[in-house]
Each structure stands twice: as C-alpha cells, then as structure tokens.
Length: 435
Image (cartoon, rainbow, N blue to C red; front, side, top):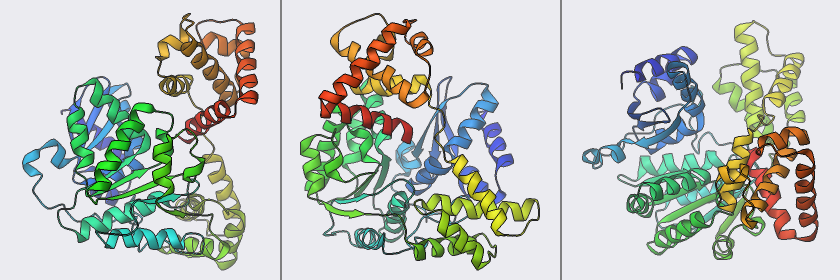
C-alpha cells in the first residue's frame, strides 16, 4: 500500500526508536479502503501487543495521513499467507512499549494474586493441565491481561508449533458478525476450533449477545472435548455474569476459578520498585511509600505514576520527590477518567443487545423491541453523558422534551419492578464505560 509507509513514518515520529523497530517497522498492510485497514503481524504475540498498546496510535496515524478514520484489524502472517503457516513461530520479541515483556518474570506476585499466577503458570507449562478451563476474574488494571500474555509467550517459546489464539470478548463478537455478513463462518470456526490454547479476555462483553454466546458455546465444547486448554478472564465471577446464558455460566462455575484482588501494600511497593528499575530511575523510599499509600486499587496507575516521574526527570530535569509524585498521581487520575462516550457508540451497543438497527432506534418505528431499545438508549445516554432532555431528544430523531421524560420514567419504573431488566441496563452502562 503506497500510503502505509507514511502511516509508519507518523508512528516513528511519535515513539522511541526501539519500540518502533520491534513493533511497527515490520508491519505490513494487506488491505486499505475508505473504512478499514488490515495489518499483518509476525505472530500472535506481536498481534496481541499491537492490539493492546499501539492500535490507538496507528488509528491516529491513518487519520492523519488519509484525513478520515479507519477501523483497524490485525491478523497474523500465516492467516494472510497459508504457505507460511508451516514455518515455526518466531521468538516473542523483547519489550512492550520499550519497557518490558508481559511475561511471568515481570509479573509481581503477592498475596492478592498468588493463586492466579500459580494456576496460569501451571496452564502454560503443562499441555494437559488439570486447570482446564481456567477462569480468572478481577477489576480492571490488576493484571489479568498480563497473565494471558504471559501464558501465550511461554507456550509459543516452549511448545513448537502450538496454535495460540487470543481474542477479546467484543472482538470475538465483531469477528462473528463479519463472518456471517461475508459468508465466512467456516473460516471463523476453523480459526478458533483448531486452537491448542484459546485465551479470551473480558468474556463479560459477550453477555446478552445470543448469536455470539451460541458460537462461543460450540467453540468451547469443541476445544474442551479435544483436550485443548481454555483460559477466560472477566471483571466479575461467573455467578455475577447475569446476562450470560445458564449453560455457559454453569461451565464457568465448574472451571478452576482464580481471582485477583487489589495489591496489598508490600506488593504495591514491589511493583513501584520494579517499574523504576526497568525505567532506570532511582526513586527515594519516602516517595515510593507515598505513591503506594495513595494508589491502592490499580496496578496500571502505579506504573503510570512512575512513568510520569521519569518524564519529569528526563524532560524538565526535576528529580523524584513527593511533590512530583503528587503532580504525577493527579495527572494519572485525571487521565484515567472515562473518555466521553459518543452517542453513536451508546446507540450501537444498545441496538446490538436488542438486535435492532441503530437506524430503527432513531426512527419513528414503534415495535415493542425497537421502543424498548430506544427508551433504554435514551436512559443510558442520560446516565453516561448527563445531556439535557432537549439534547437527547434531538439525537433521537428530533423527539420533544416530554417524550424523553416519559422514556426515562418508563425505564426507571421497569428497573424498580424487574431485577433482570435492571441488571441488563446496569451491565450495558458498565460495558460501555469500560470500552
């Protein structure tokens, strides 16, 4: 693609040379049109890192070059060129974002995550693990994705030819929709049901999506009956996945379940020290203690604060101190607030759950399914954005103030009377805010 070198040049200007060389320089573009781009990664481990760390940057680069945004999809080389599929996978490259691998060696173990770590290591080191399936749950930012990446990296390095598949719950849904629309369901089945190790992150995102749950159920059964390892992560335990089908929830409840809790003080201190060591910066002990006492629930925030302190030191030559740590923490907490969610995204998510089109939700149509979806969408928009009744009405086909008020009251009333409906609405809000 003639334009893709310009995209890579944009990325090169925005990031250090080492991570650019490792992750971006060898990327290839196999497809580009006015709505989407398909990029080819060397192997699954690289694809995972690109998805987690560099998708946003690449999106910015495409928009800067093209003048409009495109949806980016990453595939691995053997998917694009079957002739290369027999080649052994390359070693997992060195560092993520110029910092460190998501490996077992870089995972800081403490009382809050010890069992999840041990179970993950057992799964990675034993092709016939007794921990199958393994279900790991915990809040965002506590290390679930780190463990999935560690399992993947370990298996690819130590089991030659192993077919490792990693996917996020919402990407699994999107791939299925694309496969159905383009009559490629066989390729979709083959991709997932031929995995030796299947890692699915944030399974809560398939809740309420009937077709996705049906497909996942059959994929799960096919792999499990073939003795293939399955690892699932979620932000909550199986019993709290209220919108998940009973047959799936039951299988998860019979899994080996490992939770990850917020790190204790000693673990937080160890994480700060390890991050500082990797970034080659000395942080005084009183500053380490200050950070550990103020950021107690999220590992990403701890690591982000150390990176901010490093930036202050390198760019404006201010050495680590408690005042610098205070500013860094303030920056991190502000940066971690949810980005404003677009109306389109909310309507898309609600429409997908109720299996109607976004156009129908905005239209005058009044079937029971569409009306319910429309009312729920209005309620979610109000809850997430805080928009006025008039502004919400304008977004939904120019409806007036009284129509919006009626819709909100109907949703609130139904939530009071129907606990299942209430959990659906609350989960929609939580899932939208998590993306």
